[in-house]
Amino acid sequence: MARAFPLAGLLRLRQIQKDQAASDLAVANARLNDSGVRQRRARTALGAVSNEATDTTVLYAIAAARASSRSMLAELEALDCEHREARDEASAEFASARARSIGLEKLEGRHIDTVVGGELSAEQAQLDEIASTGWHRAAEGGAQ
Image 1 (cartoon, helix red, strand yellow):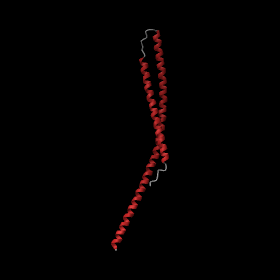
Image 2 (cartoon, one colour):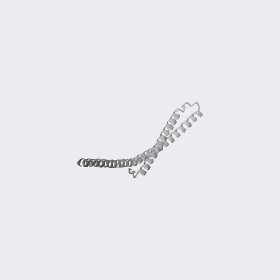
Image 3 (tube, one colour):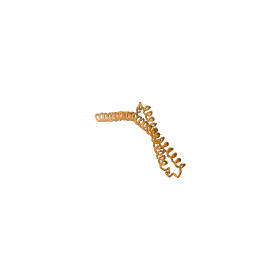
Image 4 (cartoon, rainbow, N blue to C red):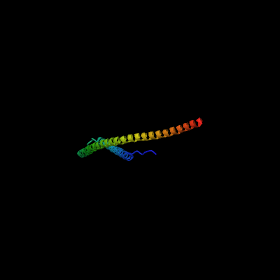
C-alpha cells in the first residue's frame, strides 16, 4: 500500500486558501467593473444635460443638474480608486496563496514519484527473484 503524502492536510488547506483568494479577486474585479460602468453612465448623464437656457429658472436647474452629476462623478471616481486598491490587494493575496500552494504541490509530486519508484523497484525485485528461482530450478533439473 502506498504511503500517503504526509502534508496532504496542509496542501488541502493551501488549496482552499488559494480558491478563497481567487474568489475574493473575482469579487474585487466585478466591483471594479461595476464601478466603471456606473462611472460611464454618470459621464453620459452629465453630457446629456441640455445647455439651452430659456430663462433663469432653467439656467439654475441646468447648473444644479451639472453640479449634482459632477459630485456623483467625483464620488464614483473615489469609489473606483478604492476598488482598484482592493483589487490590487486581492491580486497580491491570490499570488501569495498560489505560491504557497504550488510549493506543496511540487512536494506532493515528488512524493508520488518516490512512492511509485519504490513500488516499481519492489515489483522488479520480485520479478527478478521469480525469474532467478525459475532459472535455478531449471538448471538443477537439467543437471540431474
